[in-house]
Figure 1 (cartoon, rainbow, N blue to C red):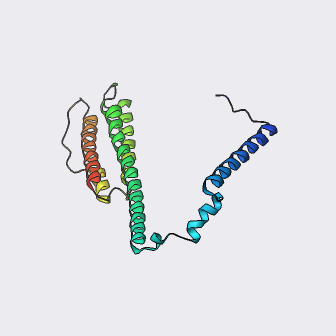
Figure 2: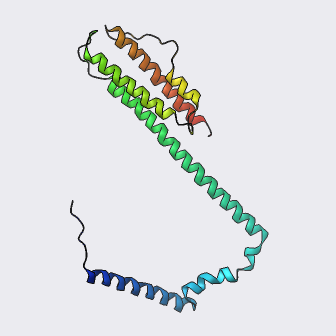
Figure 3: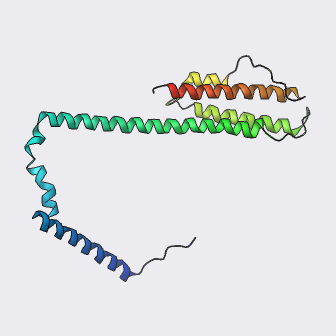
Length: 190
C-alpha cells in the first residue's frame, strides 16, 4: 500500500487560493441572483419571519414532525442493535453446528483428548452465548435462565462414549433453546 504524497507549501497555498476563489464565485452568483449576500439572505427569515410561520397549525405540525423524527431515530437505532445481537446468536448456533456437531472425529475412548477438547470448546461456547443473553436491553433474565439451566435431557446415542453422547444431548437441547430465545426476542416489542 503506497503512502499518500505530502504536498509542498506552494501546493497548500494554491489549494487555499482555489478554495477562496470558489467561495468568492459562489457569493458573487448569489449576490447577482438574489440581490443580497448569502448571510443577509440567511438572516432575513429569522429577523422578519413570514406570517404563515406564526400560525398555530404550523407550530403544531412542526412539533409533531419533530416528535416523529425523534421516535423513528430511537426506534430504528434500537431495532438495528437488537438485530445485530440476534444475528450474533444465530452465528453462535452455526459455529456450534460446524465446530462441535460436525467436528472431525478423532479417537474416541474414555481417556481420549478428543472428548476433553470437545468439552472445553462446548463450555466456552455456552459461556459466550450466555454472556450475550446477559444483555438486559434485549433479553430477559428468564431467557438467560432458559438457556443456562436444563431440566431433563433426552439422551442421544451416536458414539460408544457415554460422556460424549451426554454432551451431545446437552448441545442439542441448548441449540433448540437458543433458537426459542431468538424467536421470543424477535416477537417482543421492546
